[in-house]
Amino acid sequence: MRAILLGPPGAGKGTQAETIVKEFSIPHISTGDIFRQNIKQGTVLGKKAKEYMDQGLLVPDELTVELVKDRLLQDDCRNGFLLDGFPRTILQADALEDALKSMKQKLDFVVNIEVRKELLVERAVGRRVCSGCGQTYHMTFNKPKKEGICDNCGGELIQRKDDTEETVTKRINVYQEQTEPLIDYYTKKGIVINIDGEKPISEVGKDIVAKMRNK
Ligand code: ADP
Ligand code: AMP
Image (cartoon, rainbow, N blue to C red; front, top):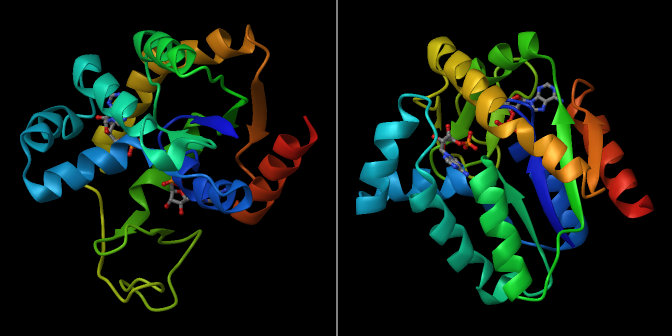
C-alpha cells in the first residue's frame, strides 16, 4: 500500500495516520515530524527549516524533496508507505512521481481529509503533542487521561510553536494557495478518496480503512 494523506493543517492527518499504518503495516513518513526532529537535534537542516516553520511558511522544495526521496529508498518502504504532509506543492508531487517511476512503483491512494476552515483553527490551537514520543492529543476532543501528561510514555505535553491562532491561519492560507491544487492533480489520476473529517476521530478512521479496502 502506497498512500498519501492530504488535507489542511488540523484536518487530522497525523491522528488518522496511526490507524492507517497499523491496518496496512506500513511506515508513517511525516515531513513535519522529520523537520521537528531535526530542530530538536539542532542539525543544519533543522535550523534552516525552523526559519520557515515558525512563520507558517513551507520549507523550500529543494530541502524537502531530497529528504523524502532518501527516506523512500530505505528498506522499510519496500512494501509501501504512508506519506503525511508531503507532497505540498506541484513541484513536490512531480518529484515524487519521478522518484516512484524510477523505483518501478506507483501510488495507490490519496486520502483527502476534508474539514471546513472554521473548525481547523480550534483543532490546531487545542492540539498538544508529547515531547517524548510525539503522540498527539486535543485539549477538548482527544484529552489525555491526566492533564498535561502523555498516556503512552508519561512525557510532558507541549503546544507546537506554529499552533498559535495567527500562524495556523497563515498555514491554512498557504495550504489553500500551494497545496489544494494537488487535489485536482491526483483526482485526474483517479486515485483520490475523499473523507469527511468532521466526524469523531474513530469514525473518520473507520471510513478511511473501509474506503481503502474496498477500492
Ligand atoms: P494534522 O496532522 O492534519 O495537522 P492532527 O492529526 O494533528 O492534524 O489533528 C489536529 C488536532 O485535531 C489534534 O489535536 C487532534 O487530536 C484533533 N483531531 C483530529 N481529528 C479530529 C476529529 N475527527 N475530531 C476532533 N478533533 C480531531
Ligand atoms: P505539519 O507537521 O505537516 O503540520 O508541518 C509543519 C510545518 O513543516 C509546515 O507548516 C511547513 O513549514 C513544514 N513542512 C512539512 N512538510 C512540508 C513539505 N512537504 N513542504 C514544505 N514544508 C513542509
